[in-house]
Length: 358
Image 1 (cartoon, rainbow, N blue to C red):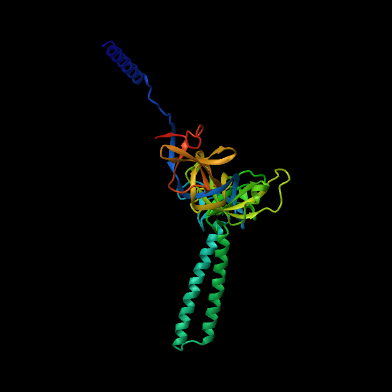
Image 2 (image 1 turned 180 degrees about the vertical axis):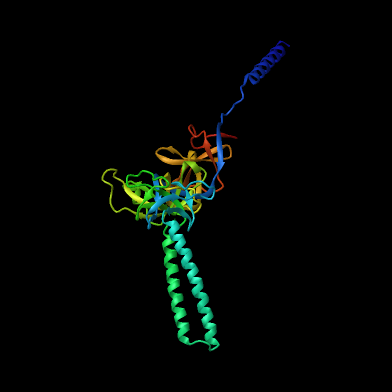
């Protein structure tokens, strides 16, 4: 009986110890590092050479005075006096030279009347000759007189037109009515033959002069694409093309001049503007791309952490072209895989992770 009590007591103590041990056990918790992820995609990547430059006109036309007189500048369609920077169209009057214009206009009107009279006389004599009422010699004399009157009229017309300064091209007025010292000439001021009334340049095509250092110059060739930007049009890029490269280096700046032809058909840009130019040195299309922040260094190698369930796999990758936001991955990664882009600092191969939403 005593033996049975001792055995029961021992079993109870064993049960209590076991129960206490189970209650005091702490569950194991495995820590997972939070990471932000993205899916790998394909796209186009460009290697850009970014520099700055200044716009200028490709060509210009200088309009000069042919008949001395008093200068009167024309007005635009709104009635405002033309000024430097005004847009003009082909055959638009820029200025008129007065003083001789009244006399020349009177002479033009008189020669026009004489021409009309000679035309009527020639028509009359041709009809009479058909009726055999006059000799052919009479028709010949009328025709000679008509040709003389026509010559007088055309001469008067050309002389009169010289008092009107007309632009042969559309564009913008770069310079308007300035003397040899650069001072503006006021309306009504006397000007002589040869005075430069205006310099007009087309706007549809401009030249951007940009400078490159030697290493960049070796990556540039005529015909390459260029994007032109100006702060006034931050959301717009104007297309351009490398036109020519300078064969020699500027001794002061140690750079090479590059000329870019700019397609300005919308007329947004103006000569003299300071612009930013992005030369497309190389482009890769439809390649595997990842955000720049997805690439990190481990042991001096470029690696990416690929999501595999609740863990990451460290993978060595090859890097190609890059732009401001993305890298081309030339090897080691496929489109559609999911990779970590935030929280990479403490990751190693096999680290357990928890995907978070940004």
